[in-house]
Length: 113
Length: 117
Image (cartoon, rainbow over all chains, first blue to last red; front, side, top):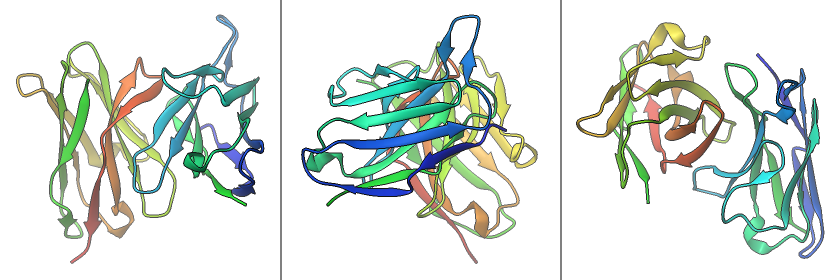
């Protein structure tokens, strides 16, 4: 199985400031034949199911604010919230879909400082 | 819009079989893949398995011996059965729409299943 490791486990950021979460996969999730990274990001607010934010490492799902962006390739990926809002308090997960079984990172909790 | 709703017992005894259903409303179950994912309290996400509307399935090898996923297109439902449950199977179980076996773009609200005598 591909192991997904996120860092940090939690972070506290002031309102309006940038939040950066990293996700590292134990093997590359870049499919060379189409040059796509098989990686998604989800947001889970307390008491709610996860919500898809980003897929193909950098494509925002419809309706997701543009303050959320994804980057990276191969084994190293980043989710950035450019200007943290109160409603962004949540746990964020990365997920690889390069291999079966699909696996998730352990989650990163984002709080307001 | 398409919505998913899990249903089933919230309490299951150890060694018994967990049974959940997911009803798809606002759209057809056809032409999509559908997955079950679970989340133990306070922990991360684990993919359990998927089913295609035609009935093709694939399970997480870690759970394969205990899991069966089925589909009923006439009811727009798919279901999960997990046998020989233990306390380690206590979790919120989510049904999801599985976009082309890539990412999960729609989620049910989840249902907590507790394994306890």
